[in-house]
Image 1 (cartoon, rainbow, N blue to C red):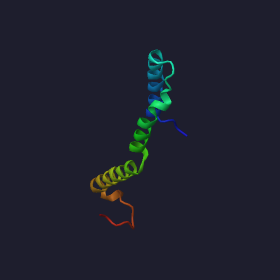
Image 2 (spheres, rainbow, N blue to C red):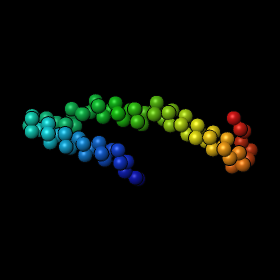
Image 3 (tube, helix red, strand yellow):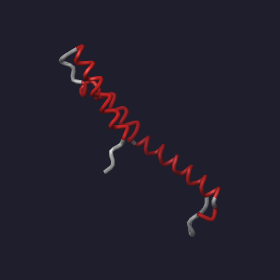
Image 4 (cartoon, one colour):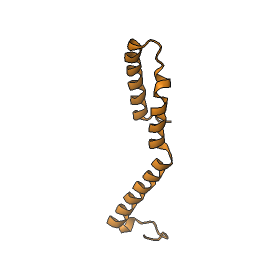
Amino acid sequence: MQTRPELLLLQKTMVVVEGVGRSLDPELNMWVAAEPVVKDWMQSQFGPEAHIRGRRRRRGVRRQVRDRHPEAARPGRAHG
């Protein structure tokens, strides 16, 4: 399984922010404080709407390829 770079960057950022936050408030639990924000981000990136956006984007790319290279279309599939 490949590690997603944006998730590594998010974790690194949270560790840095946690260090700054703990210098201001030693009782701060960054993971608890960040949970709502991370949940929203995960939903926007990997939830149903993101899945639909990805399908639409891929459909558009396939359409562009098919329009530019009709000979590459798979036999037996309808165009359109």
